[in-house]
Image (tube, rainbow, N blue to C red):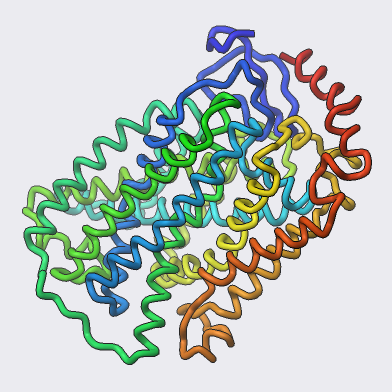
Length: 505
C-alpha cells in the first residue's frame, strides 16, 4: 500500500485494529501502531507544531502573574527560565514516538499495564486535556466578546452563546482532521502569532517601568512566592506529557537528539519570550485582566490585534490539546475512531466552558485552583515516563503495546504494573502534602512556612521510586525478561498480530 491519499488506508477502530476503507483527509490512525511505510516527515516539523501551540496568551498571563504574586523582575525571569526547563523533559518523552510508532497514551501501558493505564495514563490525560480545552474555549470566548464590543458589535445576552459555539468549532477543526493538518498549519499560525507578539513586545518594552521595585516580602513569604512562581511556569510544559502523539509518524530510525531538541525548542523559545513580555507588562499595567488594561500601553489600533492574538492562540493551543484528549479517550477502551472521540470530548469541554462562561462567577478562581493542582499529578507522571524510557533504552514494541489480551506482554499482573502505579500514587500523595495552593495548604507546606516543594520533590521521588521498583520487580520490569516474555515478543503471538496487520493493510 502506498501512502497516497488516493489509495485506501487502514481505519482506526479505537481498539488498535485497522481495516481498509476509502481514504479521506481525516486522519484514520489513532492509538494503533503506525507501520513503517506510513512514517514520514522530519524532526524539524516538531518545532513548528510545538511553537504553534505555545505562541499563546497563557504564557503572557503567567509572566504577569509572577509579578502579581510579589516577585521582582529578575526573580520572575529566573523562575521562568527554571520552570521552562521542563520542556527538555517533553522533548525526551517525544523520542518514544518514533521508537514505538504509537502515541504516549499507548506507550504508557508499559508503565502502568493495560488496565492500570486506563486510570493513570489515559484517565489522567483525558481529565487534564479536558481542563485545558475548557480554559482555551472560555478565554477565547471572553476575548471575542471584548473584540466585538471594541468594533461596535453589541450582542444581546441571549445570543452570546453563539460566540462560544463558533470558538469551540474552530478549536476542534484541526484536531478532527488530525496529524497532517496540524503539521501543515502550524508554521503559518506560528509565524502570524509570533509576528504579532513581536509587535506587542515592542510596545511593552518601550512602556515598561524599568525602575519597578516589588513590595518587600517576609522571608518565608518570599520563598513561598518563588516556589509558587516555579510551579506556575512548570505547569505549562508539565501538561504536555503527550510528546509521542506528534512524533510517532516519524521514521523509526529518526535521530533521538533531533526529536528531543526540536520539540524542546518549539516549546521553550515562545514560552520564554512571551512570558518575558508579560513580566515587563506587569510593571506598567495591572495584569489581573490584561484584556481590559492592555490599551494603557499599546496604541488604540493594536488593541483589537491583541484580542485577536488571544483568540487565535487559544484555538491553536486547543488543536493539540483536543487531539491528545481524543487519543486519551480511546485509551480508556472506547471502541470508536479517533475523530469521533475528539468530537465527543470537544462537546463535553464546550458544555463545561458554557457553564463557566455564562453561569459561573468563579471562572478565574476555578482556573487557578486547577492549574495549581495539575502539577501534583503531572510532575510524577512525567518523571515516571522519562525514567521508563531510560530504563528500557527507548525500546518499545508498538505491536505488543496494542495487544490488550490477558497474558499479553504488557498485561503484567492482572492488567496492572505495580511499580508504575505505586510510584504515581506516592508521588501525587507527597505533592499534595507539599502543595501550597489557593484552595488549601498541605501539612508539609504549612510546616515549611508555606514553601511549596511539590513541583520539585514529587517528580524526583516518583521517578526514583519507579526506577527502584522496576529493577526489583524483575522479571516484570522488562517484558522481554518476564516469564514467557520472549515468547510473547518474538514468538507466535507477535507473529500472529503482525500477520493480522499485514492482511488488513
